[in-house]
Amino acid sequence: MALSLQQQAKRRAERNRRRLKAVANGRLRLSVYRSDKNISAQIIDDSKGITVASASSLEGGKGSKGSDVAAAAKIGKLIAERAIEKGVTDVVFDRGGYIYHGRVKALAEAAREAGLNF
Image 1 (cartoon, rainbow, N blue to C red):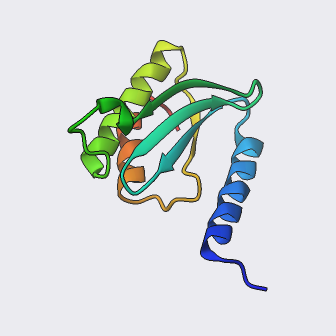
Image 2: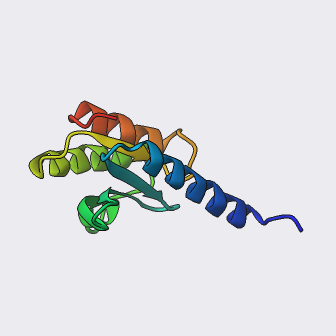
C-alpha cells in the first residue's frame, strides 16, 4: 500500500533527523518548523532533551506577517542572537524534511550571517 504525502514527509523528516543526530558530534541542532502562515526555529540539545533557544514569527504580535522571506530572515537573525547569548555557535541544521528553498533558506542564511556555524 502506498504512503500518503503526509506519511512520506514524516518519514523523510525522521530519516533526516536520525542522520543528523549521527553526524552531529555533540553539536546542538537548529530545527526549523514552517507552516503556511508562520515559521519558527529552535536550538535543541538532544543529549539532555532540552530547548536552549527558540524564536518564532508569532512573537511579533499583530501586524507581523510570518509567511514571507523577510520574516524568516528576521527569525534566523533572532535565533542566532539568542544562541550566541547562551554560548552556542556551532550547530547542525535540521530543515525537518523541508526543501532548502525560500523561507527555510532565508532563515539559514540569516542565521549564518548573524554568527552561527553550520
